[in-house]
Length: 465
Ligand SMILES: Cc1cc2nc3c(=O)[nH]c(=O)nc-3n(C[C@H](O)[C@H](O)[C@H](O)COP(=O)(O)OP(=O)(O)OC[C@H]3O[C@@H](n4cnc5c(N)ncnc54)[C@H](O)[C@@H]3O)c2cc1C
Image 1 (cartoon, rainbow, N blue to C red):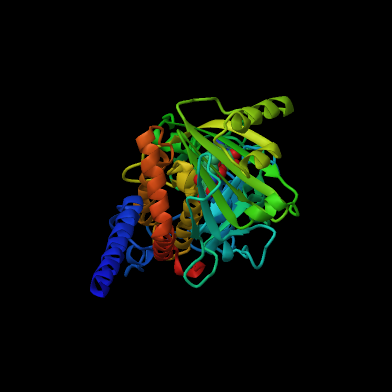
Image 2: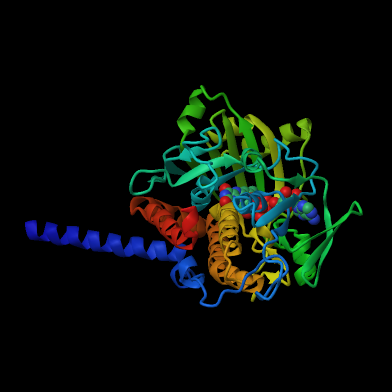
């Protein structure tokens, strides 16, 4: 009897290890071979110095002491992080950012869950300890099935040393912090850009023009810079739409206290919904993805907002607290289609113009990785540009070689994740919810987070760790 009991335990243990490894592989498959190029392995110093100073692509220039004028198009997270990192070397770079909006609006955009991006932000003085008002640490992922108030499972979002692996921030707060000290020119909508010898000329829709030695396209999924390099193409509609909003709750209320430090999700037939606290003042970001619609992006006035949120949650008996309460307190609610682009093959640059962030590789938001990738891009590019031994051409080739495998892998995992989350058949929902239960039970989420962190640490340049 004892022996049999012992055998059963071993069998369960072995099965658990095998199953959990299979689940990690399923959700993170391809990551190892795609991410095999670490920053250090690609960007080791070259033996023959090729200075990438102002007038020279090949080291033969005579104006090496001149700082390089770099223009960044777009004051989103990728453009601003890059600007801040380059500004650490004022003797080498003169950085200007051009943004088509009139201002950095405090009510613009939703929030980000940040993992690897936080490591780089720390090197800019932004962290949970230094700027606690900016970040809300997440300790637990809590998952529910439609109509059920008992969680399918919970997973720890802490690293093995109990430090926080994921923090959330409102986009507007992050962008405001990042913009400090950066020379941003608002109301500057890039119309076209062109490399003329060693100079890049930019023309804006207001008729103004300027010149620089290097132009960075950080202008998002509908990038004008990308169109200039690779021609126009529409982003691809995923077949999924999203309701997305920001609510303001009383930070002292019971409902808020219950959801603090948690990311909460709920899955149903053809929909997936989630929420997290995004600052310490009671702001909560929530979303609900669903299938088969292609709405135009719209903002809502008060009356429309009221009807939209009623329709969104109260017409569905599936959705349980705290979602209805959070939605009831929505300050903003939008409904839009989710788009992506297939990976650009071969390069992200032409001449002295290069793309970063969503302009280079827009992905679907199912893994909450787009901003993290954008921040990583900025760190890798800033590090390579700071080197004296590389020409611009070498910098851009290395940048692509380091970043393309990971961004392509995250794109495909996000698409897989979206299909998984939005299961609509009875069998599909059963599979999804059973998998979620098993993933919680066997610590798969914890392992995925650890794997993501390990992979990011390899790619982040040493000076930003
Ligand atoms: C619903 C949703 C939820 C998301 N959640 C997360 C998350 O939790 N975690 C995460 O990591 N990522 C998340 N993402 C992805 C993330 O928002 C993007 O990947 C990230 O914002 C990309 O940053 P970026 O700076 O490259 O581009 P953007 O943030 O798009 O910034 C581009 C900037 O360029 C400006 N611009 C555009 N065209 C021009 C022009 N012609 N001239 C001048 N300026 C121009 C724009 O006004 C904008 O300010 C989410 C995305 C969506 C849609």
